[in-house]
Image (cartoon, rainbow, N blue to C red; front, side, top):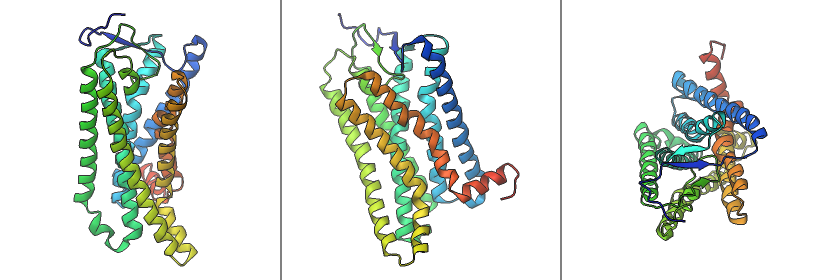
Length: 309
């Protein structure tokens, strides 16, 4: 095949999760339902934290940002997939694919960084409770979120520019339901050494460092909780970070599961199916994890809909 310069490329083809026509209505209904639940659930979390003055605290400020990012994260991939199933088309334009890579990279890194910031917030709340409000002031909270956005945007811009400089073959089928960076890069006919180095470095820095921060924060939290003498005190301290710990475990377990499955198997269809867990399922479950056992969120939602708290 003759290589085709990236300025001449008009479309990519997204092969999706299955090419069986009989499975398309089932996939469409399932993903539409999950998308609507994700948007509604996270939107309710945002409305509850904004409307209730009791939730104007650093923890819920970070939670509302996480909910907003989860809505954007899912909206980057699922609507295009649903449109392609409905129109029985696999096409995504070259510009659309680059745009999807850009925004997907922003929001997956933002998810990662915000979870690390929330772990630090829980660390300060449990290990330094008397200085919590002094440390986690409005200025620091705003700077942490702003730094997360700037870091994610710069990383995403770097990867998008990297893809723009690549040349591709004429066969541009992507065995995925969205333009996943690694899949797109490996369609190129250019030398991929620099691209792969950039991807691995970004993964190590923006994936490994926040994870290390989360693990460090929780190691300190566990030490502090163990030092509490009463069982009631231990339960109260642990309950303040149980929801966040559940979300962190779900996010990193699914993300690492996809990463290791891509190493073990070369089956692109299996990898794309596994990717559904962290791209769609995790953002959908986050509102339930944070609201079902959180009395403050449940009270805020009751007040929001006119019920008694």
